[in-house]
Amino acid sequence: MKLDLNIQPLSSWIKTSSEPLLIAGPCSAETEDQLVATAHLLAKTGKVSALRAGIWKPRTRPGEFEGIGSIGLEWLKRAKAETGLPTTVEVATGKHVEEALKAGVDILWVGARSTVNPFTVQEIADALRGVDVPVMVKNPVNPDLSLWIGALERINNAGITKLAAIHRGFSSYEKTAFRNEPMWDIAINLKTLAPELPLICDPSHISGNRDLIGYISQKALDLDMQGLMIESHIDPSVAWTDAKQQVTPAALAELIDHLTLRKPEIRSSDLKDKLADLRNQIDKIDDLVIQKMAERMQIVEQIGNYKKANNITILQVNRWDEILGKGIKYGKALKLSEEFTEKLLELIHAESIRKQTEIMNKDAAGQAAEKLTHA
Image 1 (cartoon, rainbow, N blue to C red):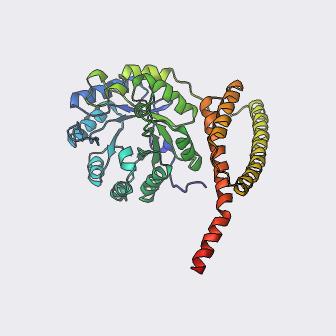
Image 2: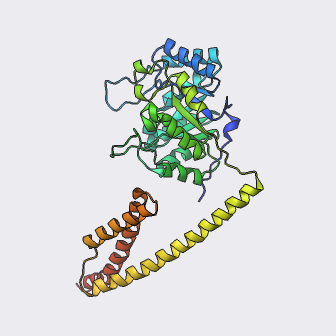
Image 3: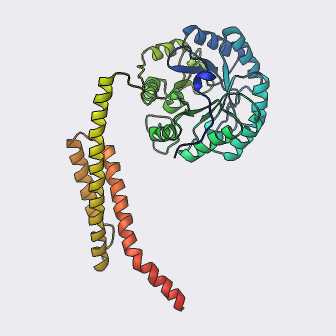
């Protein structure tokens, strides 16, 4: 089911200096000179459409730098006046919204730590009611698509039609190369549910490492995201926050130059015909896969009935280890990744367990109810 959002096209509220759309600036506004100097260098690249800077910083622990505060709004004013770049800041309270709007900030964004709390989002939405300002909503810290959608709906219901989502990755207990796991499937699901909603990627927070920003940026563009938000500092080595994930304006310009832009639409009739043929082949294979899964589950039901009749446990650990080991080995031979094969087999195994559990409990539930009736 598609999301019912009333929004305007991205091009109606932000002018793209070049492709892709790029929002850049320091993680934190530290000093007036630092912010303004960075803004000048970014504007000089000719690639940046808006200047970002954090002035209110939600920190995990007290005592860490929590942003320069409201004085940073005056610095943003100066940066805009001298460079012509529109400005954007994160807001986390109704008071933040009021101060940012009063200072003439052009675009607001709702951070990941705010998106996770519907009360906070509603406070921000209430402060935005009756205002015509663009708002971008980052995904929540935890991988919950419903929270992300809910935040977008609350802002949209307040009358904000210049709306965009920002994909900045999700927290995970697993230690990987990324600061926040991309979990691209969640962003893809949002894009599928709301095709008209602009989706911007924040490679800085996904990577946590400037060396990975180019890789994440290219992946985002390949998935037809409409732009990038990248943290840039005049001298990242002395940045007060997130030094490792910031790049200099010059490095940013070089990074953007090396990205490959792909078009979401195909104009050539020959290419369309070829793509249609390949998609038809995939559709036939998908139909066959689903048919075979249905046949497999019918056999699973027979196994479940047999186990029940002979008082055999549902889970057979040795058998599962055998299926998994053999399947991964076979998948590798067919050039499938081990991760994909394992996830696929786990999904099939979980459904098999569910079906057999249902068979085991079928009569037991009725017998328990009957005992309660006669008790």
